[in-house]
Length: 473
Image 1 (cartoon, one colour):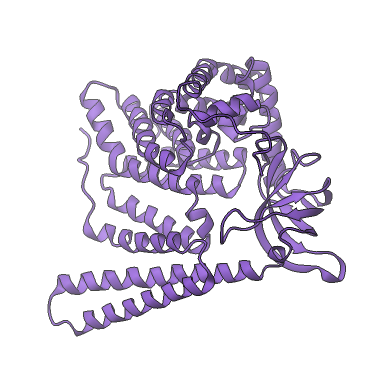
Image 2 (image 1 turned 180 degrees about the horizontal axis):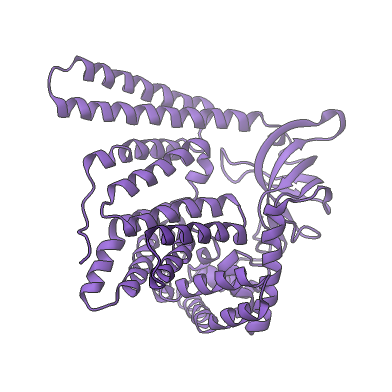
């Protein structure tokens, strides 16, 4: 008989309200001028001081004093968040790259993630610009941005250093870091380390495995859905996935780690492993997942939130995992506000919070209907994570079009299959290509269903039309 699912204790949720206040402040001041964000910080700091004075002056009233203390903490964190945004906006305004918006300059930079195709041709490469300008005008100041290019930039592993002449593009909105466009091929200055070469080798082998195991568009879709490698997916298929609201499946999220590590936990339990053995297997699986996909910020973010969600499945209380999730959100909001307010992070946090609150009760309900425990756990994870993230997809524009919701519901049962088997194939590919081919081939029916849903949904009335030529920035 399973242990009862306990509601969160109040003490377990003390961090949630202040974290929400911090996040709301960071989101509200994103793109604000430094002076405006600083003014918000001052107002919140004054509110924190007032509520603290009130709490100290209050006689008796333990609950009232505790509430005022919680309000003070929320205002303090909000003030810190607004102050962080003010400092970031000031640094951005003063960065040498911003001075060259609309013009050309030389840069020294490092690749921080794998390239992705963009509409209209070419690729988008995440980079960290470390030096702007050349010769006597060179100024050292680090900033993360994206580089748009066409020739010679595909396949550079993370960690590769380079010099290039670039055009600095106008930001799309206030407070956004300007993107850069390469005006020629890179001049390499540094080789990537193991954290870049190992995932790059895995990607290359995965393309070979997929080509051997699958036909047509499925051969390019599998690396895209498992590793985020969209290089072999045709523009037509990418547009079908965009129009049907399924583009987000090519981005690594907390759901990916949940499916992979969850499958390992279930396999370990089926083999009779004890609690420590299951935890050890989950840790190894998580480390392997990061090594295979690559230690990009999005992957590390997904790994962190995915682990918290899985912890909730084995916990009898939801409060502690919620507190841990709130701690992750708090740290990311303070250290990296652009990531915190990005759609990818919101999706991961939403999926994880849903798993913490609802996955175990749904699993218990399914067991009561006669479903075996492992199957009930897996199905609960899939259903809860997908249903919770669908509204976020629609509101963020990732699930664009009127058919995004039914399309995502239709593919929900097969996404975990592709994720788990595909990740296993990517892991096995460098050491046993034949076994990886068998695993990739087993993904064929699920990939066919994904293609079919995307094709049908994108052709229905009201679906977004393909972008006009030259629509990419």
